[in-house]
Image 1 (cartoon, rainbow, N blue to C red):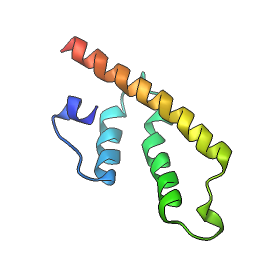
Image 2 (image 1 turned 90 degrees about the horizontal axis):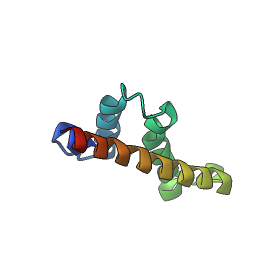
Image 3 (image 1 turned 120 degrees about the vertical axis):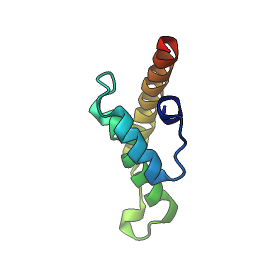
Image 4 (image 1 turned 120 degrees about the horizontal axis):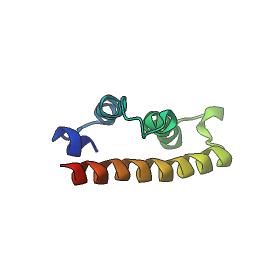
Length: 88
């Protein structure tokens, strides 16, 4: 979506979050929970990759919910890209 709408590629996670937020902020067909998903999923990734101590665990129900949200996110973004290509 970032490349399709801006012609640019984000080079970092932070850049992806920023560009996606800018490009999706006025997208009525993308629910707010999906617009926030990238940042939330990155937090889970950071915990899984490098956290230590009691906060180093991602509960199974939270991981399962993130996977389901990821499916919805991908389907919604794919639809936006397909719609944009069709309109262009």
